[in-house]
Image (cartoon, rainbow, N blue to C red; front, side, top):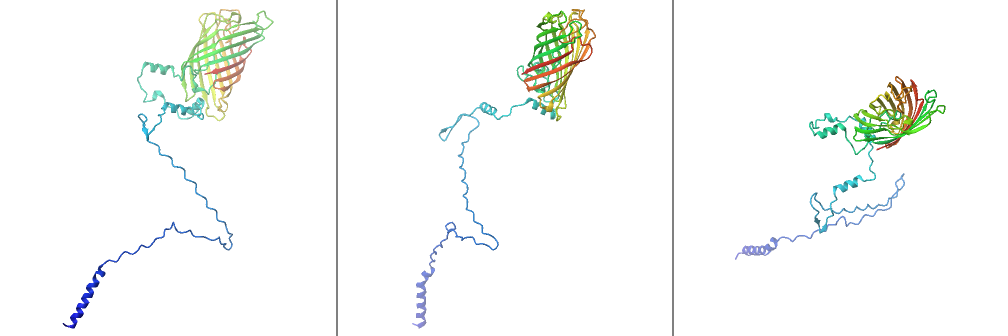
Length: 433
């Protein structure tokens, strides 16, 4: 066999023995360990090194972060309607009624009470409200009772006064005829002391006094009933004459009143009424003359300068005419005017000026020899036709609250025959609901 054959066979045998080892894959290398950053040891810093020209500042101590607030436990969802159900094996509390929640809300001690005076003045200062009559949404046809309700007015409560015009005050002088145009519920205590002129031929001087109570009841904010005169009269003539001092019950004056106009935007009021003068008092103080006098009257009030920094002003005017159902009593015309100043719009102190004029238009026949008349103090039924007396008064009214007020005025004659009137001091106290 040739030599090259043996060499080739030997090479092939060696390749066959080494082929399986070459074909097998290499095993995977071991993973290289990775060192976590969190496990790394913190680097250690040395003490601060000073820099040329700058002092070394101490390193502040690290402050611990505030602890996180505890997580609020989850609240079980509840449906708005239906009976309470059980959640997680525990009973659900009873549902609080809406009325009870409203009671708690309205009973808060920090709630600010409503002020009708400020509400009224704020409404006056702002844009006018929509007129009910011009409201297109208002029904043009309604029940008969609704129309009657619109005519006689609203009521905020039984016998509650109309507080939409609390910036006004009641007049002080001529208290039996000068009526406030507002519909109010009140009791008013009145006292006046009137001096008689020394030259009066029938009495030679002296005085007339009155103490009594007025009452007013507001049925609605338009309709009310008034008792203008109910009390006692003291008649004290001069000691130079024979007529003795006397005291007795006065006449009773009463009747209805209706407020035709009450405009909150313009601060305007107009009222009219009918007064019945019933002479059932004592004859010793001339309170029983004739049988009856009927007195129609009208009163107007207007507010001015409600937003003035020094305070607004209020004006009132009254006209009344008393005519007797018989010829025993004298007939007369009464005119009154009032002007007050609401100082700084505090609604507390009101200086005032008032004028009163009384004109006897028809003589009475009860005492034809007496040439004088007693104005609102008494009706003599004398021969005083044409006697017209103009008087002026200065005074003030103070409101402790809207429910408690006091007023005073001093009145003197200005022109005309004085008859029994030389001067008068009037004092009143009002308790208003």
